[in-house]
Image: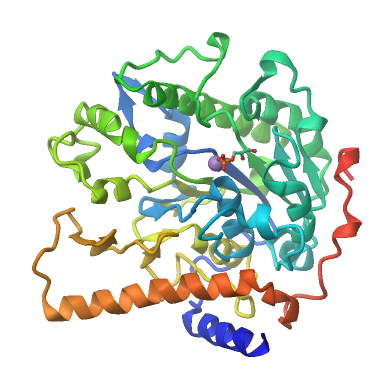
Length: 443
Ligand code: GP9
Ligand code: MN
């Protein structure tokens, strides 16, 4: 086990990307609010369906000069969906190839995770707000091992009757009802909101939305636009609260989509809506309903990643390729915290040596110049590369191996719980999960 750890340490050290001088410490000392946008895909940004703008508020955040907004950012989850996305953001390690890391390993795992890292660097308090039952995805155990001090879930809110949809408290109510807790958290804090209303089956009570239900020919797609619009409104309401309470100016707000909401089988229906808006979706060609390929499906695995820093004036849209595994080093560097001694598998998106080969959990990958999806190679415009040159194949082989190594190093660390043995000079002690009790509201 020790020797396996040594191999991983060596890999991580070689893969490490030094922070950029421009962004290092840019948000030092600020509260961090992470908003998990359930099932939210990047195509929703700036999208119109049947003439209606779907997410006007998030569009304004996306285009704000106070936001670093990423346009080529991909989810990297497998079956663990939300929970594996959370795991990547909290630990900088991948979720599992099969099943969910939280569910399979979360109860006994040794983590070096964001809440504990921030406690040790800046004395941050921490909390998660989520409108579903605490045991879903084994969060109640996993969060303790990550060092989360507070976890407010369904039992802390009134989730009765029409206050909830399938996965719990409606997002607008989650934000509204959690305000009183957020205001009581000692600053600086690290707070995470996990939304649920934009989750399949994408249903909402009539009184919750005045968005005209589109008619795309696919009920899932119709509902998706509507619940995404509801989520957008709930975020706007939350921002208004943050401004009113004065928390806004002291906070960095991180928004990300956890994974796709529309499965590949519904993508042709989605493509028809792109055909109405070809300017915005030119990446799918002039007629997106024809010749839909695996490459098109891969394009749709983009999710939003936005870092909103109130007062910042030199943000803007970032086109470098990256994924969820890169979030933790990126965020920690913005807070001025070194990641050099952590066993994290992504790289700071702002770094000159950021790794732009984005691994999907199934070993497919995308890069700025080409993609490897299934057993096919595509150029950057989605044309299949049928006669690759020798030199190109050499590059593919190298990238493919890098993807395999990145995933397998992470799996080896997690499957064998190797952080138990890892002495990190920047991380003191082991997290004592027995310190935390989530059954009594805010601690
Ligand atoms: C439930 C929610 C959904 O609490 O986070 O998880 P998902 O089905 O998206 O993985
Ligand atoms: Mn999810």
